[in-house]
Amino acid sequence: MSDLPIGFWLKHLDRLIENDFDRTLASESLGRRQWQVLNSLHGEPGTVLQLDQRLTPFLEEDETTVAPAVEALRQRGWVSGLVSLELTPEGRRAHEELLERVKETRNRICQGISDQEYRDTVNVLERMSANLEQD
Image (cartoon, rainbow, N blue to C red; front, side, top):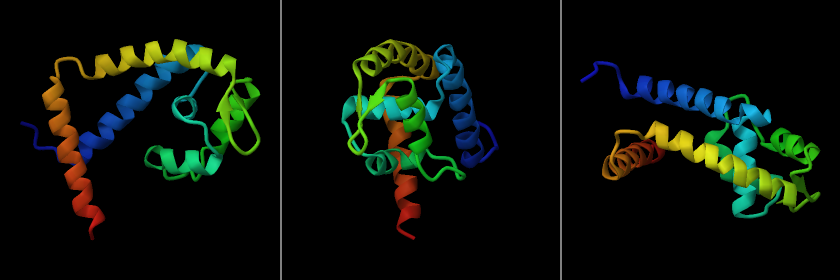
């Protein structure tokens, strides 16, 4: 077992995931935040404020909003709407194609990890977060 603390592994894994997703999405010149907006709008249309609330846990310290990602997707013709945003037909097509690559990446990340191990890990991280949120 490693003597390194959990904080090291969390940050290290986050950087690795970020880099891996960047490579996965690079063929479409798409960043992880743009993917997250695209994926979120695929699940449910919403405003920039609603997207900010949905994606806050993923924002970096220097990010306060996903508005730049929304605008980049709008410029590609993948998002429409001024207040209530939704995917265009081109955006839905792009999401479908990218989702397959993202699933492959997620499968690679979890290779050799059982569903139970994954659920246990998430459960422990949720409880640790809850402990700190109570303070």
